[in-house]
Amino acid sequence: MASDDDTKNHKNEYSMVPFKDDGFFWITFYGDFSIGSLGRAYEAFRSHPDYVPGTDELADFSQGSIENLSRDDVERIRQYMAGTSEQHHCKSVLVVGTTVEYGVGRMLTLTLERDAPVNRFVARTIREGVEWMRPGRADELMEAHSKALLELEANSDE
Image 1 (cartoon, rainbow, N blue to C red):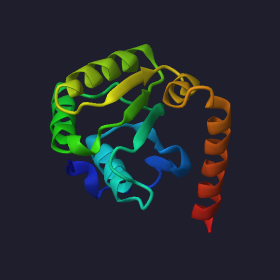
Image 2 (cartoon, rainbow, N blue to C red):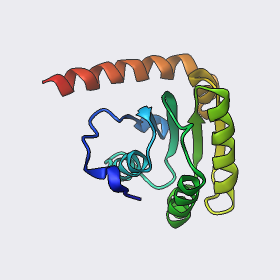
Image 3 (cartoon, one colour):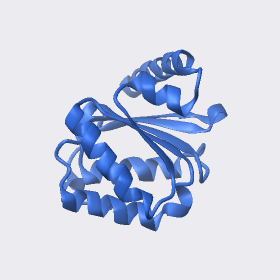
Image 4 (cartoon, rainbow, N blue to C red):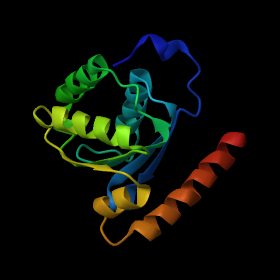
């Protein structure tokens, strides 16, 4: 799923926090979304030592933007997901920041349903997405995520 922008510096285009005991990963995207950033994030996700097929995922675009996804981009994502559908029998949350992105997210999830059978949800807030993913545990998991990001940041400065 690589694209022409793969040769650029992509440091800090996403962060990934595994919640091994809870069976999911929280991936936060920063800045404008690109097909290349999605490909790199999913490759890192699937090659992570805590990943097993069927691991749930929360993709947070609230600090980035998916507004610029084109029809071609959606089709490329659909083809990619269809090719890896055996790995995506899970819960998947897409968190977006704007009404336009909510519409794009719904369009994307509806397009993907025919090829990659996943229990998908598009959320307008982190809390809503985490609550859907793990009911009754949003506060606990959001706090754990914040701590994990601070630790990741401290480790990257070393």
